[in-house]
Amino acid sequence: MITETGIVTQADNTTAWVRTTRSSACKSCQSRDTCETVKNQKQIHVKVPNTIGVQQGDEVVLGLETRPLLFLTFLLYVFPVIMLMVGAGIGDTLGRRFNMDPSLCAMGIGFFSFALAFLVIRLKNNSLSQQSQYRPFLVRKRPQAPLTTCHS
Image (cartoon, rainbow, N blue to C red; front, side, top):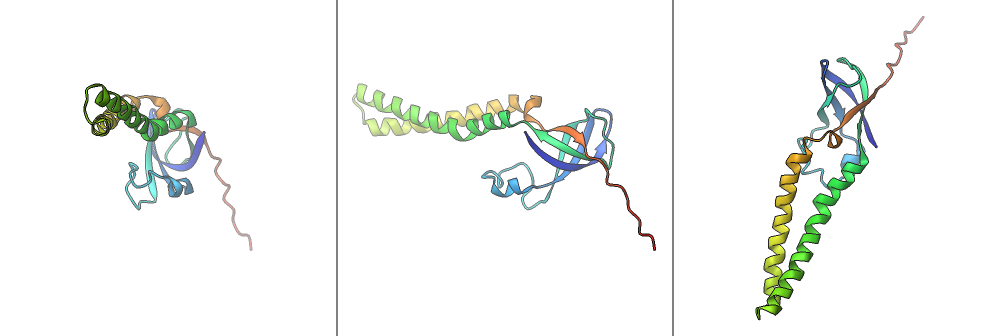
């Protein structure tokens, strides 16, 4: 599980808005420029279900399951390449069978299947975004540090 700390900026009985700062993991992420967060913004606001009764000002730990994240990584980076290769193989076979230029058919059907992969990803995105396993959640409240005073 991936975790990140943040501060609750708004909360009610069902929902909490948590402000968190981009972590060092964002710096090394290949998708940092296309992430839904605004570029060059250091703070991110995340809407999560208020399952542990947090209130405004609470410091919390957010979690995101790793397994769904790995599936999304496969879907975005590996699936289109597989579709491109399968399409190119089918195009090459069809080109030879119908006495056409196999390279041209491989390229055409390969690019078509590559584009089809992104259409599938787009359609799948709409259904996955509704599932709770692909969203961050509250793990726990962090204990408040006691205030210390100086005695002179």
